[in-house]
Image 1 (cartoon, rainbow, N blue to C red):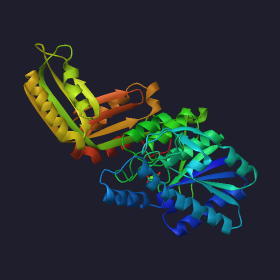
Image 2 (cartoon, protein in one colour):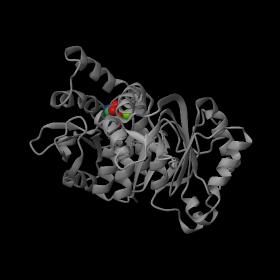
Image 3 (tube, rainbow, N blue to C red):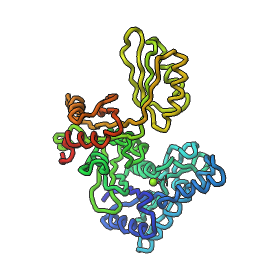
Length: 409
Ligand code: ASP
Ligand code: MG
């Protein structure tokens, strides 16, 4: 018998029929003898609908009252799901975040959980009740309603699992697990049975949006085993865990997955003097404009001059370019160039820690396809390249093939 926290996202509770199906699924686990805590999102589209309503009143709507509004979406689904359990002859209790109680800081619209008092839930479980909790919400020290940021129900699920010391936090969603890469780009992509938190965080930050990043970080910090699985199909899903078991580690592939990001843009400033403070003078105004910089590259200087290249989100391209042009005038740089038709492709895997030559293998695979690499960056478990956007599909597929990701490790 285990204590399981299961989270169902918006599409999984998008209609009354689907809510009834969730009830049946949870009851399957309950009947197998498990203690069940269920976290739900609002019905799909509901949070967006509420945001749109708010914007009709005030296009800048945010803060306390927006949170009061948005949390109503989840209050609807907890009640409906609890009713579905009761109708089936099970006792259930639904709770809003504030009732649990989940205490957060006061940063409305993006609050962070500070503590969870799980006494009520533990008592309900002892009484054999199924507990249903509203995702995405809490209250601050003054009992103001707060929300955890869009997609925040994942975090609620993980935080509850940590507080209750649950055996597993299971995130039910519309995909059946984490894949070696996006199946829409590479149809041969394969579902992973296991992936580490570290790898998952790299994949997620690179745009593979299966889980809210914050939820993965939370699970890693509190060592909560996390499983992603489909609401609609049977299957084991993907387990996200601290490390591969010893048996698994032996057969572990060098690379676990290939992530990519289409939202990149590249900026270059040529011919700036290679003196202390130049990087700061170039990137200072960019960060003052709240533009996040991803990769940064500075050339070895020739004749006291150097070139400086960096990437930003494509949405920030125009602003970054304007800022860089101003900087160029000030620094008397030779020229400024920009390219917003680039993408980033990354290979990710803890296996590369113990194996040399992965980078050169990656470059070999890309060169065999005639793909020119514009920038390279590496970290302990990731190698990223920037390439022209027209090579995205080709590059991802070639790497998927070249690193043998179609065959199960
Ligand atoms: N309903 C919220 C949202 O749409 C929270 C969630 O679904 O996780 O962002
Ligand atoms: Mg959602």
